[in-house]
Length: 332
Length: 231
Image (cartoon, rainbow over the protein chains, first blue to last red):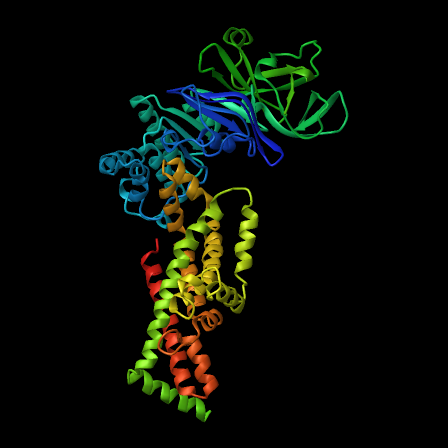
């Protein structure tokens, strides 16, 4: 549906996004997770066609989007910003805005009533922006975006000001919308719980690049100058990293590169940490198991096969050893 | 103090008695001010929006020029305009020298930078999320501009007030290109200057009071509009 190809986006001289390929397929809900400043909001702004990438292309349905897209093209994509803002007027006026921009004012009544009900806004329709809480503003913004029935819906931290119930209502509204039509949804979020629960796929961003690593295994660290193996302090443990990089960096430990055992193994791995299993989850596709363990105050996630998990008889609370090589640790 | 008290008494008599000359001057001033403010704002507000929202080569230079124009001495503008409108000037064929139209042109030249520079600042003060949100909800450029402008309505009302204030209080160009001709191009400010120099403080005060009332009425009207337009 919508994709980025060979995108390098700069603000002044700094590269803030560097993606070989990123796509949100039709009918999919993709969650993008990452630290503050990882590039999530920039990614969404490019996908929203609000600004063209410095280098590379944005494609919608396989066609390259021009640097100045026509209004008809822009109308296929809608973004709800992290701290959304409402226009002057009532909640009802806000929900009608996009429809009126499309000359669909006559159809607004039914659509507005529908989205307002989905997101629990029916009693708020007559209120003005200063009469709403942050969470209500966020729900109105999502409803306003849903009302225009975009082909691609982009949400930047849509539940950051919402309580759990409101966040649930929001995601259920997305599920209903997706059941009705094959809308492509991309959600940038800090809340991994929501990402795991609702997303079809999770992509982790670190320093503007896509990471193959689950977001739990990403750490911001300070590396000393020099070459070779260095120690990166994370929580109470030191992770051995093989890199020439120094200063503030993000290190990533791919879950598939972590050996899981009951006892320390005799191996070349420079990183061997004892801990306890805190949680286990079957992967969405069902092929493997994610083993989450607390190793010295740091949570690491390892991906192993279901058979291996069975053989090791792992369960929450089990003692476990995680081992991985210094060269397996990626540095961004 | 006596002459001031006498001046106020005279002013009161002229105003209450409906003196034709006083009201003629007031009406001309109002006409010039309304026409010049309207033209300045019709041109200046969109120019301000353009400067505030578009990124183009030379934008910074354009903003500097507009901001510099805020400080143009009115007599210098009057002088340049005189050169243009005089018989041998580029616009001499218009025959506007010593007409109220010439005063309007001078006032527009002075108020246009105010309207453009202050409205650019007002639009730049609008939360950039408003524009992005309007665009991402499918608004075209006109609806986006209208939406952003509505958010800046209080600041833009102040811009209109400032432009009107500049025009209604202006004396330099009015004197030079208007000529202060009785019954034709005599405005409140040029008349006050003339009658004060002639020692007719009562008439000067009466005209000064009208000038103040005019400014007050415009401000009150804008404040009422602002009140109605609040969230």
